[in-house]
Image (cartoon, rainbow, N blue to C red):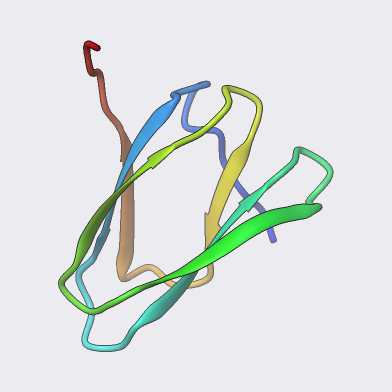
Length: 71
């Protein structure tokens, strides 16, 4: 699918605002999937990714935002 790297963000907050579990895919820029997980309804997960990796969710219920963090 048409993924986004969220302006090269390396930490992504994912929230499923809907009432159905949704599949999230982490992929390379050429759409090659490198991992997936299921985001349950009303759940929040944080994804730590490489700046060039993209994230894709096939439904508008899934809200994604790049976040800043300090280690």
